[in-house]
Amino acid sequence: MSVIDTVLVADTETGGFDPEAAPLLEVAAVWFPRPALGMYSYQSFVEFEGEIPPEARAVHHISPADVAPGAPQCKPRAEVIERLLSFETDTSAWCFHNATFDRGFLPELRRPV
Image (cartoon, rainbow, N blue to C red; front, side, top):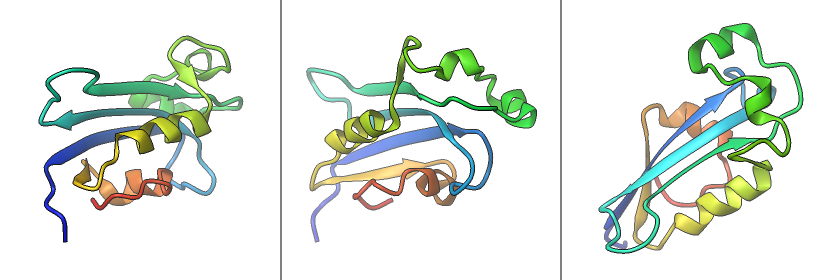
């Protein structure tokens, strides 16, 4: 077993509760300890073309314009996942406020929670 020396703290915003039916709309992450040089946080909206339920919008205030393809700070889901995976190391672990929920929308992540 390897020692965990970096914690990747992340949060998601979604269009609902069911990862099979609702879209992932935003991901943000920060890691501890902060590296001496380079990036130490990440945020991106996730491209989505469709209806965002009003009850979800009331929680996170993400509009269709925020997640429209080509919008500023918005990337295709595959690119967002690739970036998150690039933060993982053999000695990192993920931390979420609600891990069961967030990991349901990020099943590609490989490191433990």
